[in-house]
Length: 369
Image 1 (cartoon, rainbow, N blue to C red):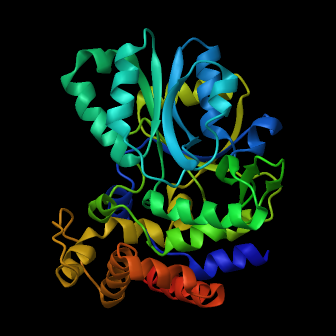
Image 2: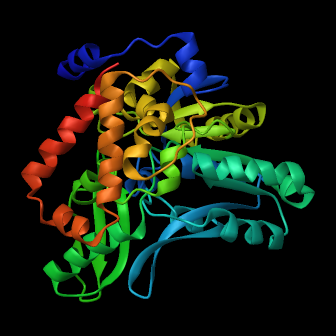
């Protein structure tokens, strides 16, 4: 009941124009979760993406899927793309990865060398780039059966995960053996496994509080306005509604966009790989009501970029209100601060209560409409 009251208080009004602008073209939206409890365990939000991939593999729709997992390279946590050809390999990719990747450089060779039908899971910017290659390269276009886009606010440079993992290693007194950025219910936890056998599962906020403040953000993300993956066949992501917080099973917000996407999703439904309930897309937008519009508003970031020796084009022509201007200023100031040596020291010496208060201030700006 309290969750519904809070949702009602913070709820925004979304016009048809808002839906078209932020979400793009789609057929319908729903709230979904995997029927496999083991599969849900390491998922970031319901296990739906993995369930759809496994169901498609078992139905012969695809022979494999291009996915991404966290790996350790020279002792550093990084993200690596690979083609998963079994359910077990698909499950290895579960959970969020908040670190920069080289999508086209890694994925195009994988697709070209693979002999079979593929699904591709990627961020909005990844799938936009892939779509261009599908259109100009028949080899790529013929192999990709469908794409799943992950709702994305922005991505982070490796500096952030390097510092967070360094802190964890110092606390435990051992080197990392494996790492998961986020899994589990609601905001979730990190899983850090160490060479001495210790397994730590701290709250994801030890990483995400910095990430949500745009410290160590990739610069390219400042110019992006695609939050919901316009070019995907299916979009999946978190639905941060308070009424869902107490639900024992975390669910995924799914936006089915194309005929191909609908066929793939209905295959998962008919095979009982997922359970779903229809949802007004506005509920998904409410669950992303802070970062969604803020992400889209490149206009505000373009307006303040001159103060930070940056030049950002404005492709959206969005109206810039005072709170959007201030939020954009904070975003770029934080990014630029994290790009300097002394700035990094300040960021990681900041007491957590002060950092949290700063994050609440930023979220407050994002909540205004």
